[in-house]
Image 1 (cartoon, rainbow over the protein chains, first blue to last red):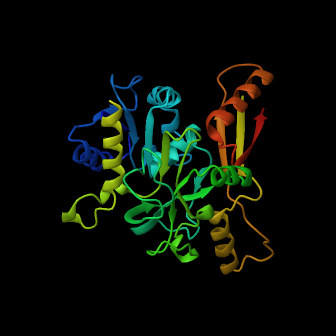
Image 2: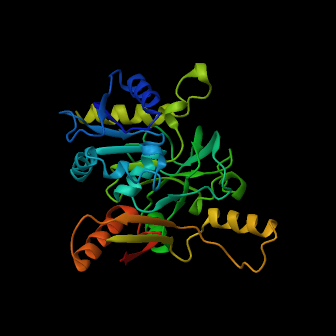
Image 3: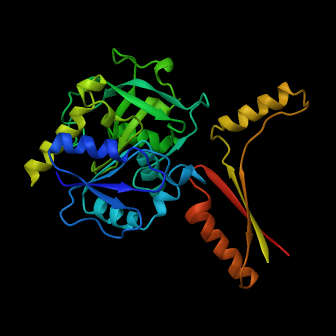
Length: 233
Length: 80
């Protein structure tokens, strides 16, 4: 796994992400500055971490989506390269158009920072192969704009094509409004693009990977990715 | 020349900020308000160009950056 973590001004989760990528793969990821116009040679996954790129000015992720490095990220994705966007990274992917829809202000208007439960909807993606379909994982979340919204045709297409990968649920995997804490359409927490090589998700699996800090439910995502990429290499 | 680009949420898109403002106005006793939707206004100074060219450029600006046309409408107005 040769990961490239994109660093935008105002991002604050890039070191957590880099630490987790190293933990999963044994390899230090490249940190790529937003003003760069190319990815390091041999990059096999691009990660857009969480934070507040450009202070969330205009719309969350809007300015970062137009940063010079995003041309290279779009070309990489168009060739089938894996792209993972977490939190602000998900917002950036939506603003770039690599993923459909938009992340709106949380329905309850509050920034919500706590552990949440996600049901893994499918295990046959490079991102979720470390889990079983239907498995519920506990990971932290921290965002004010995570309320996933798209027009009804887009939602129907995402659901019909099985592109909703993570959903907010109760600890037993049941859907319930009180566990869909940000009001996302159909409790959507993470989606993939049509080709399945770009994943955006609001919660932070990279923060639940070490026993010293609590649950390790986030590990499956990164270990699954590392195994997938090492096998491909 | 000056211009103003206004960006508003499309109808049907939930606007929790507008709802919160609406609630605050009601609690302040400002009567007769049915609903509030929040938007953005961009005041832009134009360096050069004729009116038609400027309008086309501002539309490009709105399409490329100022508005997310999935959820927002925009309006371009040239002033003076």
